[in-house]
Image (cartoon, rainbow, N blue to C red; front, top):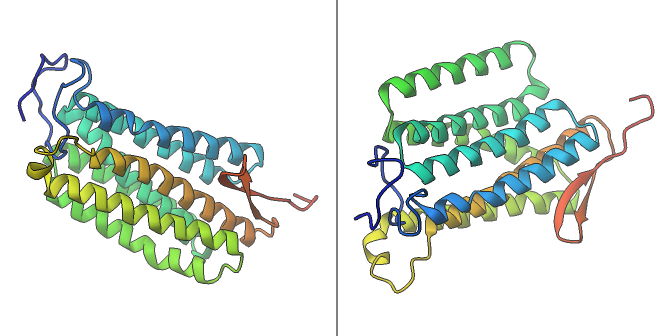
Length: 255
């Protein structure tokens, strides 16, 4: 795609995979819509973080919300610059975040509590080093999908063992936003030549960012509910201003 104005960041060195044309609106932001579409993720993660801290959830959930924010910021830097270093700063935290989800999902029933975080930490560090050296392309995507699939059985188990209707709705919203976001992202990549001929570019990859921001929030909130049930904290799903769901708990006085 031809650049319409000079680039503040220099020539594009990352792998171009999105259908938004470069430097249309500013010489400082390569892909404007793909950059600003990460803002909802940051806001939702901040709301989740405040709730986790205010109600004193386990630290793993604060780290999870912070990882969502970090991932969104990395994505903003990547789409703003389209540089190889920033692309890896976007992709590597994606893997780290899935490893954190794996820990939250599987650790309650793990017989050797100290081994899982050590293994996941070493795995994440090893991947970061390997990715910086070998610059995985398709291999990164396959690896990321496999890690996500490893989380699926446990997520389904949590769903079928949850009786609360509003909590189940969170899981359904998680699935719906995942499917919608994937559909827009897929069309943006596969149908790019046709889309560029349309009067208006729907910015499918930007919509992917927005839907995945909500997807992460719904996933985190559902997992917070399930963990609170395990800890017998009497969780219930309530709505912020009648719109955004979050988990409210009542810890026993002994805790």
